[in-house]
Length: 363
Image 1 (cartoon, one colour):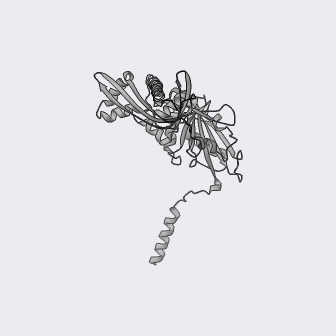
Image 2 (tube, one colour):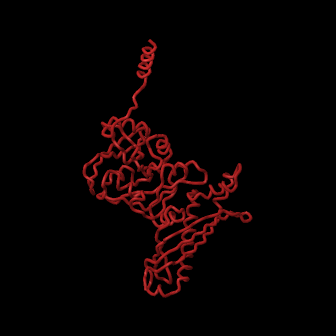
Image 3 (cartoon, rainbow, N blue to C red):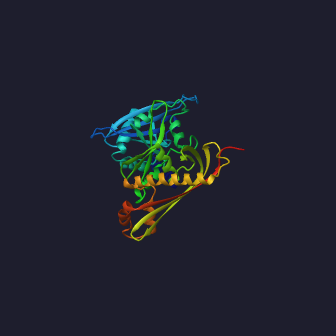
């Protein structure tokens, strides 16, 4: 009798349990790219573009198959729910490594986009983010002829497995969340555009405050920013020596900064040490004294670095984290307010030391 009662109780408990909701892989649509744009409609301001991967037996250049689903919605979360009625499989963001924010939306407010991404459990914190020009939809629809499988080309552009460019700035969801939340450290995102339908151009950075784009860096400034912020140190540098253009390859670069107070003046001192080799140089460099080249290159690097730092400061943003360092040095109530008063008048000092290791020639 006791055994029968136990079995009945067990049957009742099992009957109240729900299923795990697991769906097989053939019943899922894997989202490999997501774009969010400003639609221009106040009632439905968000245009959401999903790049869905379609499995294919062929793994060769240009053989990837992709399905695009686009919708305008009053909110991002609601748009994703409505897009589920457009497809016959469950949408899965677990493999989505690329999220694009349209340029127009990035000029307005990126916070709703990041808030939605942070709250979804199936979006990885290591997913890459960037700004799309003219919009995210256009960039996602670029069909790279070299693409092996859906989303592969854009992912390799930002991943270490593919190209490594000194013009590419890589930012993840976790890193952007930190920059949005931390006082004294402002966000930056790569800027993607395409001049045709078969390739991407990623050679600019959009610098932001806690809400929207404040300024765009040119390709030359982008490379310099990546060097100073230590996002990418192996790069090239152009210079002049006695009227002759020279190009050097930077093999290693170390940069650091400190903030000091002298009387009533705040000075941000940045020190840069780099080891370089010549890629293009006038004839006779091998047998000449390299000290003159080193001094000239050091002065040129200090000059362009000062110009970039002052340009960023005038825009009222701080992507290098000077304010964060000041808060760490002056722990206490009111330190952030003090820095907001000091930063607009702060003076920069840049000390660069260039060491030439070779000319690229063997004699």
